[in-house]
Image 1 (tube, rainbow, N blue to C red):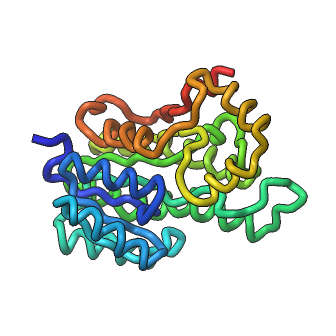
Image 2 (cartoon, rainbow, N blue to C red):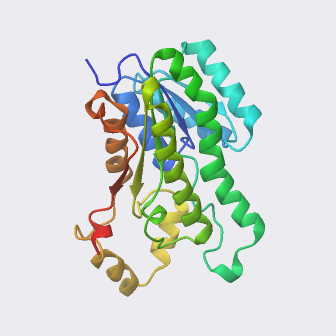
Length: 256
């Protein structure tokens, strides 16, 4: 028996990159997986790949910042699969916005805060009542080391959004723990996933790369599969007495 047999997982921003690695890892442990994203073509590719691996998957075109779309997604999933047991709020990132303070416009701030923080709030708001009817559930919010330290490749809009996400995590864990809902966050450091991160990393000089890696005791960047493995742990019964935490996945970088 697999760790997540009989569970239904919703993963936002999961048509590619980190989100897809998480969705794939959850499916390998027996969970049905809902791929939520704004890229319809990538959704189809992701669902097809999961189904080719004998997983049960569905795709939903959804913008996490639009409440009506989140409501529609939840209704569709419950109608098709009966319930939702696991939510991974992965949609987010710096979203190709500037990192220099003097270059950040109001629309950059709004975009990053809305996708990373408002989107997680809206998904939690609509899915928690479904979990309560189950007798419980698990939420994992994708934060970052920037949420309680600093960012290497993003600006203040990103660090502020991730700090807010960690506050959301703690409050929801406190409020909904009595109803059997666990809420945790994971905080990776730079992970080689997605074209933007790869491009930013490749654009750095060898000296800059060396400096960053020297700040990490394990002397390397993380992989999406390493992050996904921790998400699966937090989604499973193996972490049944863990709630309200943000777990660093940083190779020890925060020690510096």
